Length: 176
Image (cartoon, rainbow, N blue to C red; front, side):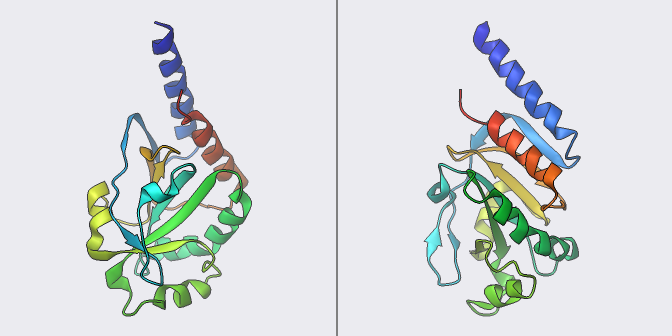
């Protein structure tokens, strides 16, 4: 009975965070995050499990998405503000957006977002595994590589209230 009450309290805490970010959806039950490969500018392969230990925000974006482009200026500030606090944001774009390796880096530098970790999803395997077909779309993954929720649409990533809500979600997602 006590375990049920603890789970209910955690769920209520997560649900109370949802209203602060209208487009956030925290799941009642987490699921193992897909582990499809994504690639950096040098062609090195990574999996989401490579980032376990941190609260991970996987932001799916496209250079053809106007709301995604509007977020770019804020993302580097979000990363700067959360760096070293157990929150890691990575950007994942479809391979079809880029003609050559390294093009994404040059594109992001125009928005001062080139320091944000960014990857390419070859053949859309990771996005498909998550069931994501529109951008921007962020997946929230806890330190044990479990998907706990999603943020659909744009955010003002550098806003202190948004960052505070992310920290609350992170704190509530810690395994019991």
